[in-house]
Length: 239
Image 1 (cartoon, rainbow, N blue to C red):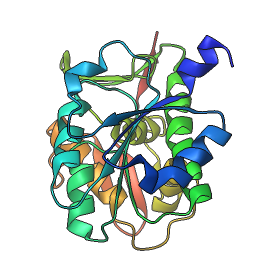
Image 2: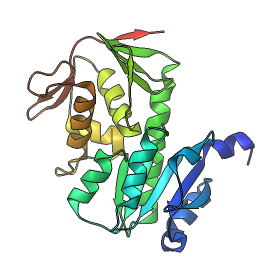
Image 3: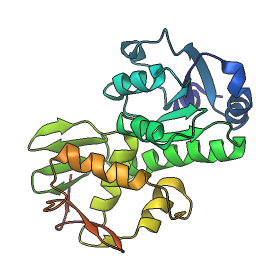
């Protein structure tokens, strides 16, 4: 494996018990990923440095909330996808993880092929939005730069999780058109909408909060009841 290929497929795993998810890490390695393990409790976000991790995988113990706290601290320092794993079916705990910066949350035990598919989906979304050749989508004071994976509002950078960015970029790329929930679900997860997953609502809510967008009188993201979401206006490409 070349050095370039290694850096493009290197995942940092933060866990207290690597053996508990050995089947998942083995699945990743078989697919060509390089896995580096570190203690979740001892790791500090500032230690990320200039390492070229393509994804962070946090194996969270419930309780305590150490993993979710670290996720929140890491989000501002890491632009790539962050996935949380936990033996927890509590919906509010999952929502908290997504609210504080995670791009995906999987409950253990999880089927290894499904886990691998979700990892691939996260990375595929990142690659697609990076394929904009440095061009930015601009709508008024809002600029969405695919090359830098950066969002600026009135000239100030707004921090988004990887999945929030992907969703905003996807909707802005279809400005003026209603995008169905099923289309969004297919884009984000490469799967049909199951009728009850609330993650899209959470992402849209978080995007609105960060953009200061009033859900009752939105400038950017409009909810079209029974149809989907609409990015308002006619976005233009720059660059």
